[in-house]
Image 1 (cartoon, rainbow, N blue to C red):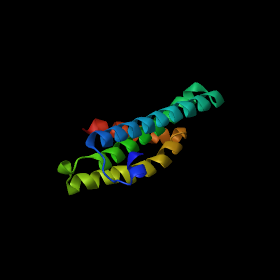
Image 2: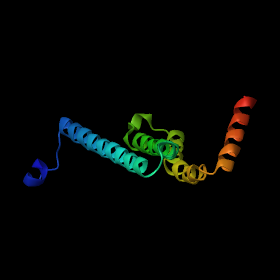
Image 3: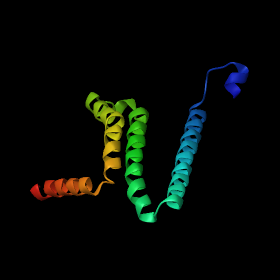
Length: 126
């Protein structure tokens, strides 16, 4: 606010760190509260078991999305490498939209059994 009132564009390191801390804190608090409210609403409409089986995969994809996005944009430039940037970009932009149809289709018992057989087959080969 000081910068806009006095028409300056300088900010101290501690001021920048404080702004970033509060920004991330309030974003995290909002996401946490919205997740809790969404879960509470879903539980009040559906049975508890169905809520767990539906919400947990969504929360996993959401945490993957936010963690890769945060690490992609907030990592220090000294850790930057083209292969790491590419891997994080793919995890950030391709994997969550790809997993959403899988999550919604896992409600189907036949598909759930097929995915389980595939996953256990992979682990038995190792």
